Length: 208
Image 1 (cartoon, rainbow, N blue to C red):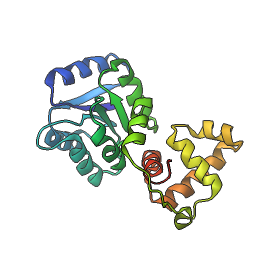
Image 2 (image 1 turned 60 degrees about the vertical axis):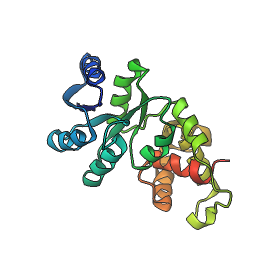
Image 3 (image 1 turned 45 degrees about the horizontal axis):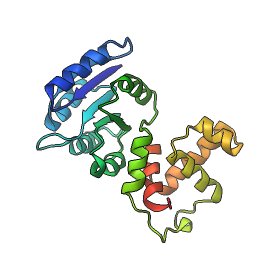
Image 4 (image 1 turned 45 degrees about the vertical axis):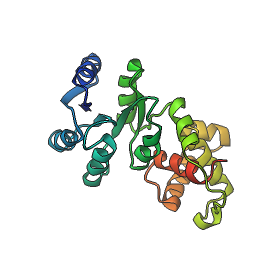
């Protein structure tokens, strides 16, 4: 798979390239050091996964990611973050990013990229905790407005907890196919694009 690396610290981007190219499944197609370069290089190389820092210069990672997703809604963006990025987490995930990984955990970067390439969303317990703490739920949330059933509520919560369809099917004693059908209906009802946006929807509206 082709991976584009964007980080305003050239040493970090070089280090990431070395780390990723030690994995046989990954080819780094280009590196860049700004949000502007992210957009240009993404359009030029069409990578399978964009690994991008958030805190950059005039155009940060979220702004660049938003522009990229406008032109390619299927773009798979995986953000690099630090523990101090609380203010960006909900916004980044809500635009359709496929997840967050921490710069400190270098050993998790390649597996996370592969997971995103395979259609999974990646954000660890630290990030889930930050989402939960930084987004205050609305006390007057009305399930009926979205026509969300009790079964669908349970599935939404399990998705927000990071469970896969297989894990959800095991917990709720449903087949994986049935879970997929429920999830498709839930995404349509809530207007969410994917599981990540559904997790944000949960923490904004339902979590207590």
